[in-house]
Length: 269
Image (tube, rainbow, N blue to C red; front, side):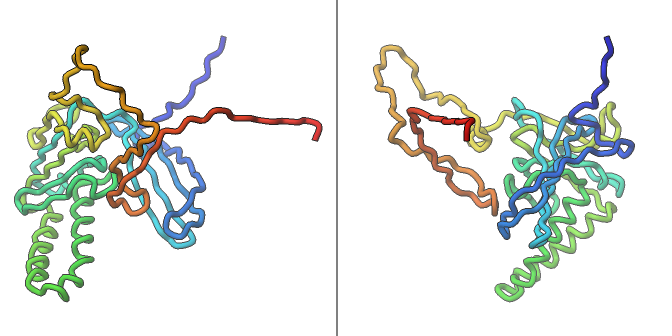
């Protein structure tokens, strides 16, 4: 009996391994023509499996990058508090899901949950992306509110100084799904600069993740005779995000009953 060796589906993210990228032709949501979606199934060291997705359209040149954890939603949320003390700390890998929020308390700066798609980057990349996004709005603010524009310029200057790594600051990542990650350069040993804690997610966060939490006010007593709700004529609305612009919207669902499906096949013709 001979055994064949097969590569694992999720391979370690390493410079030594040639990544296996899957390319799929898919619809561009901007111009409605076809573009290319690239999928990379990989495993980040000391973390878990993730799916990295990249879309590019040669017609309208729209690009989009996204990360999705390949693991289930964890039992508890996770919070990382990291003290950035030198330029090397800015290179630490950060896996951020769309459910994660990021804050820098020293500047009272926060990236809210669900405001960005999931990504694999580093601390410097997160700061650079934030500065770029705020700078793009500066010209508009200058016209509408010159005083606010001046304050925004001062804030951008403070944010830009963080990229040098010379000024210590605190980087806080909070993810109610429990699937985000901040690299520990001392792994598997503990890191004195990195504090990791877990927390019980709120009912609002659980609903945001699509999880069900029983209401304490519910009384499943057998003596209570309630009629079962008939959902056949009901339209259910689920809060979600638009797949095109990521804005909040409502997905409507209705239960239907299909009586028969008939399939006819004649080989003669």
